[in-house]
Length: 249
Length: 221
Image 1 (cartoon, rainbow over the protein chains, first blue to last red):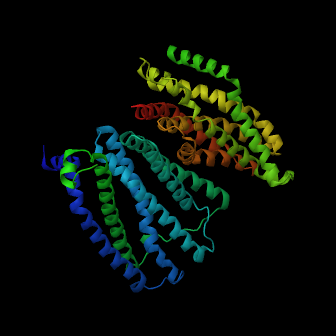
Image 2 (tube, one colour; image 1 turned 90 degrees about the vertical axis):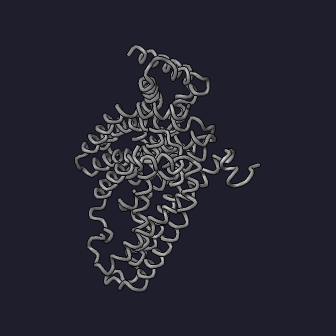
């Protein structure tokens, strides 16, 4: 067995993962915080104001990384669930389920920051723009996964059922996006577009990239922390957990 | 195939003995369509404007309401587990269940849709589009529902959760279905959306029974 496969197999075992997560959670959060501080400072103070949107465009620096994370985490969740269903790796179930609340929060941040941005820019909190609508449906999909996971008593069965829902959901997301794009162009013609990052000037782009990296590390730290908690919850009666963290009542 | 027809006969006769249950989605859709003019006022022009949307949403909610019955009674009396153990491919079992479910819950609502259309003053030009989109759409919703409902079998009270899980999956069906009626109302070509839905139906007819079988095995393991 080559060393990478061996590493994955070993880290998949609950006690080893616990040690791994305990070591790396704080490192991830530390990197995320430093990047976040640099990115937010640059976004608020260094970057010049947009000539059209003025100061309000700075919301982009939160909005866009959060939106990317909301989609990425859903895909990660579905992938981890698929791995868990196919190879029955318990840790992947836990990672998928730990990702769901983080993804839901990123989606909520996207929607709220988008609404706050929309008010000065478009003059309204909400429009039925295809992207907005798909993002809202994405939030409902996340909530469905979280709801199903918490409704079933048996934790492993719950993770498998909710994971399967995530897999159906990941197929659904592009269809929803396609459907609402079609629906919206039919109804009101040309829609307002957000600024594409590729059309951004370099001086405005780099804080965005820093913040994109920051949210990735934040997710990593967060998922390690949450997965570790779920892992310990399920393993609390095992010998290693008792030895490492004291006696459980 | 023999098993398929045998199951079909069993489920239809079971349904026939509980005829009153089968009338529920029909009455529900009717009631929703009665509530709407009471809330929005009885002016024909205004009702006609939103008639297609109301009928589509009434159909969607009716199908959501009965979704839980798809496996529930078989699950509670243990026959679902017997079917799981039977030497019949599980997707075949599910395909027959979904077929009966559609025949007994979606088809009655579909049959009274012309009546609902009259109640809400739907323009006659939109009726063919409405009927055709509902025909394909209700089949799609039954198939999608079969996958989602299987996952909630382990939960005792699953009504709200099932809605939360199924409605996002219904979004594309609703958008294309109601969209085609809307296009028909504008005098635009409306068959395109129906073709897209039919393509989705062809895909789901093949995939959904397998996906639902997987979901059922997960829920009952």
